[in-house]
Every structure is written in structure tokens, then in C-alpha cells.
Length: 298
Image (cartoon, rainbow, N blue to C red; front, side, top):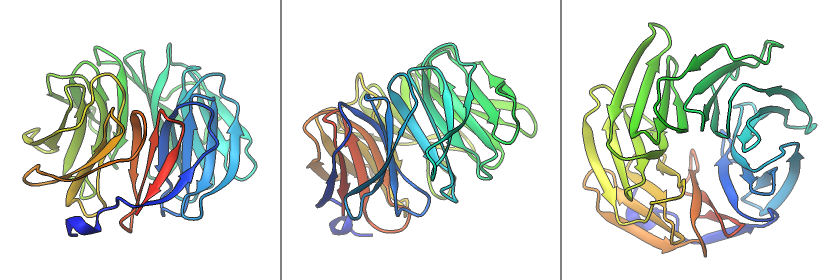
């Protein structure tokens, strides 16, 4: 994919949240997106047509993260009210609330079978919850972090967490082994490459770091953006050719994966960019911001 094909033209602006939008995510096939915000709501959109479809209300405080199952039937959300909400997408009904975190919950993810949810919290823990059981207790608690866990990624056999303690920790659930990579700077977002070989970590020294998953080796660093006090997402494009991330000045950056040069930068929002989500198939992306908007780019 050439740099000229990277998204930078605005297709649609999605408005509806009152106040900051803290997360915006494409669903599995990229036809829809979900967002969560300071206004305690989750919203479902068709970003390609610029249409708001549904609002989900039950959270008592801000919604920090949201994730939908591959079949689009269920969604999971978390935030400032310490609870994880498991929703039926079509009816908007809360199927279950998982309680157990002692403080704000920063991130949630379904496993690939949508049977388990893993959450990451301000209470220094990651917790796994069984969606099929009627129990609201976690089936596993990982509490070896020394500070807030900001972000979580899952593979078939591992739970990976990024923390303000400066580490990215990988837990192999089959053999009960923990691997820790210390980046020396607070980590506020982690993302897996599409081939599964690398972890991209956003750190609060305004640097994205690419790690080899097998060896823990630091492969590359990406700089130029501002990330010092806000959680700003990062991810790889769907071909793994470029790295993208938001900046606290409202701009979006694209870097060449290999040589870390900035290949594109544009002003996307009038305030801090909180989320970037790259389309799974085509060259488009959605971004969200403290400015209250979600924007679709192509």
C-alpha cells in the first residue's frame, strides 16, 4: 500500500455524544462502529453512511471501552462505574453486569469465541469473566501489575496487558506462564499486529514502541506525536505496512513500519484524539476525540 492510499479525506462526521468520545471501534467486518463517551452512553453507527443507529444507556459514569462479538450479537463495555456490561445488541438490553474491579475499568475484550471477556482496571488487575455462566464472579484474576492496567489484547492462548507500571505482560493461560517486557515508560495502549508477531505499545513519553512477541526485542520506535497525559490509541494498518496513532494536538500520524519515518500527518480533530480504529479490509479508519466527534476517513 502506497502512502497516497492512506486515509486522510473526511468521509463523515458522527455527532451525538455530549462531551468527549473516549473510544470508537469498528466491528469485525468494518460495516459498523461503536463508540463510548463521557456522557455514559454507547452508540452504534454506520460510519459509511454517517448514520446513528442505536444508543445503549445503563452505565452510571463514562464509558471507556467497548467491544462487539464477531457475529455482532453481543457487546461488552466498561468505564468509570467499575462494572462490565454485557449487552444484547439488537434489543439494547443488559444481559449481565460483571462486578469485581475495585476501581475504574479501562479496557475490555472478547476472546475469539465470544465466551470469555477480559477486562483491565485501574485497580492493577486484569479479570476474565465467563459470558455463558450465570456467575458474576471472575473466573481468573491477574494481579501482578504494579499500577493501573490500561489496555488488553487476546490471542488464542494468551492474555496481554499494558500498564502504567511500564510493562507489557503476557500470560499464557495453558501453562500458567507470565512474560514481562519492561518499556521503562507508562504504557497506555497496546495493539497486536495482524500477523500476531508484534505488539505495538503507546507510551506516555510520546513514543510508540514495537516489540517482537517471541523475544521481547524492541524492534522500532515511532515519534513526532504528543502523548503525555491522555490515553490515545495506536494500531497497525490492515496490511501491517504502517503504524498509526492519535496525538493530543488533534492530529493523526502514520509511520512506515520498518523505518519509522512519518509518511502522513493531518489535523483530524480540534482536541485530543482518543481513538483510532483501522478498517479490517479497506483503507479507511475512524477516529474519536475529546472534541465530541467521531470521524470517518478514507
